[in-house]
Length: 373
Image (cartoon, rainbow, N blue to C red; front, side):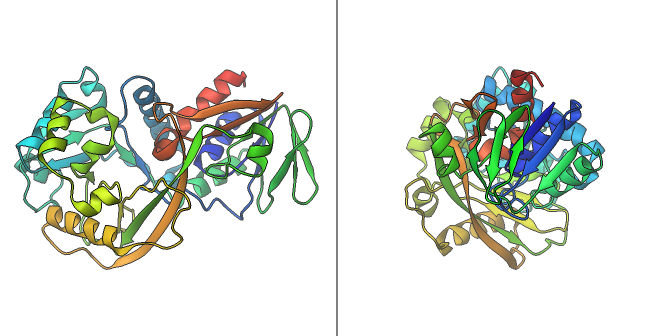
């Protein structure tokens, strides 16, 4: 079988990976020299802790297994099974963590409530003040800026993979084929369009208006911290954002503890992970209303800096990079991904939202299974 994959972000690359793993030939087409979208502009977190129970959690847990297995074969992914900590500072926040521990799927997530001393023993960089911390043992991390490059290098070594950069696919031609902006046609037995947040142009022509929206975020990265941050770190605002924490205790938190005005205005949570070079990736905001701003705002970065410094008990290193990104999210956020047959032999796979980096290996595996690869 020959598979044409359009889009070299993490979702497209994982589709190419599964096709090659099953013995098929892959032609992988990317409009840029390499992917430049949301697949690079994220935390690189394999984030199990906050996922909704049911299909979303099952997908995340399967993806976590796949990331670890692929990471053992492709060291350039930088896979680390580091887990996460969410420090809590008062009784309202602690109650949400305790409610999460009472979930029937808590053990599958690796939830554990640690005392402040236990959390600092696990992650000594957390010298700030907090009462306890919710641990999720199943969370992990990879390097988002280099993961696709490492996967591509491994794919090229198989002899079954061809990468065609700097080509924008303009048309779907009949069945099982696409035409790029150089006028060349690429045909096979199946075509998978993994276009990320590019939902106009080709996608609109072949699929119409899809039930997917675009979401903009802001993030930043520091110079090396100078010491290990041994786990990912979230703050209690993540309880307000992730569906796993929905409970009466969360209702009480929302009623009794107002979110910081800047965090509320920009729909913020803190997520933080250390890169292999020692720097910290920190975010993020969520903007849903179009048209998106073309610039970044300082207030969210200042808020994130205050929160991180309060957990670390020390000033942040110099901010090295700031950026904005846009990802595609299903309008019905309970859906893990939008997978649609748009022509005979042609499928569109998009809309995983902030789950894309986490769930992409399992999303691609499901596509491969459903298409009978």
